[in-house]
Length: 54
Image 1 (cartoon, rainbow, N blue to C red):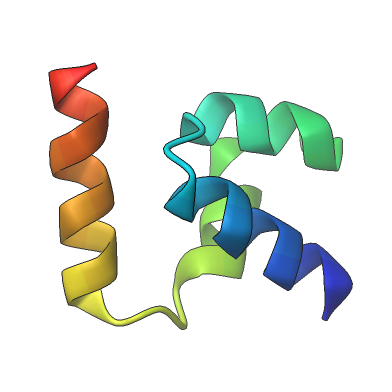
Image 2 (tube, helix red, strand yellow):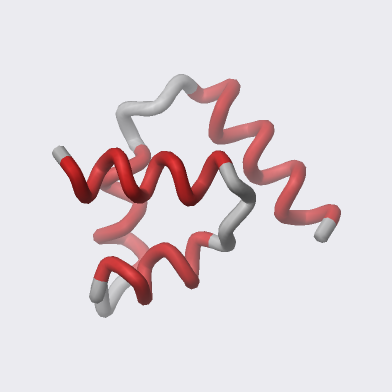
């Protein structure tokens, strides 16, 4: 639960998915994405839009 919360909070702070994945020690972005699948799609859409702008 703590890892999921960390990944979610990092994402909400505009941390790139690759960086979140590295901080969690994942070798694959797919593993990190599992932590974020339970989020509402609107949250993920907003995140993706902000990352593209950076």
